Length: 533
Ligand code: GLN
Image (cartoon, rainbow, N blue to C red; front, top):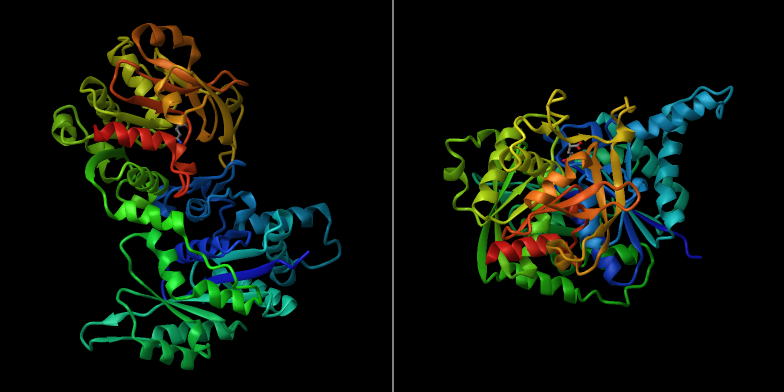
């Protein structure tokens, strides 16, 4: 069997240059050429996973099919490549140290002093190589989070240096992403920050093979040549990546810049199959030429940081393109929705989505927004907490259960319509202990959701501790809120619908995690369609 080839993507100058999008775009091009590719993200923080991080700190926590709570970049990888990722695709410093310390306690290093080099770096190398060999990929792209020169990424850079030395340059290359700022005052692009960040890498023993220069505007050939000369990189290996209107344009731009071809040549792999990207380009054409516009309100409490809802906003981009419709996603702060201003804030919307979330902050605003959607026949999609809030709203305003609530918000409520799952009651640790990952769901054949999915056996990803309290099911059914999706093994209610409403669906799972460019999610497609009417 051919050896697995490794591509490392590092970043210099600043964070947020879009390493995840460049990695995803390169992977897309290689995949379109017929290679089996996966992408892995390394996060240099000490949390074992981002599940315990506030979305304000780190954006959305993305959940894989196997139930790993991971970095939001894995969402981009899946959306671009249309193949699932798993726990192995996200390494954190916390996870590496945890494994090494467990091994030390077990006695695996008996007699030895356990050190960053070689024990931590060996564990990093093992985790990197594991993805390629276990899943049998031709190419593994590993994105190193943070910026070169950061104290916390040093062991990773050292691991890359070692892998490169062990496998040779034809099996392992480094792409370094930097920023080339434009100085208005002098009217010039400046290459010095790039030169300095390459020096940082050189100090760590790594000569980058390819440079991707991020810039606001297009770069001149002179600038590229200057960077090539001073950074000791071939001219063809200096690639520009200027800002574009949508991240989905980046694979096409990288193809124009021949990034994939340069990578393949360096890895001594065939460049025979040209990636035409037919489906991808069709998607882009639809995305850029919408025939109509709808405005959908996303009611949530983390709206100050749009990255907190990354997968939801991307799902709307995919579903919008299918419907040839531009979705204007208006982020509405749930704490700002009050009894007296609800209609003013919501009346111009074509649809309302209440977002996932935890804790009591902003809950009442979410419930008010749902009441508005239900009473005014505005299409509504509730995701996870958004479904739970719809259940609470219905209890309070239709069933007249005064003070009905989720026990997450009020443990003393007389009507705990949403309650802690049985298996959660004994859980004390917070990290990785929710109901996580994919679970099967049986969909009611005669339902809106079944029309959308066009099938009745589905499987969707979860991330929650609370559930619908089946004790109240009859009350709901009698009054017109119907369970249309049930987990066959545990009898948990996964979907609630109001059939008499134009489009009112609450789902306990997260459809947004599985929407991709090639496979937009049916629920989002159907919801946007309903909003267009
Ligand atoms: N906080 C709720 C629960 O744990 C909802 C979680 C979510 O929206 N992801 O059940």
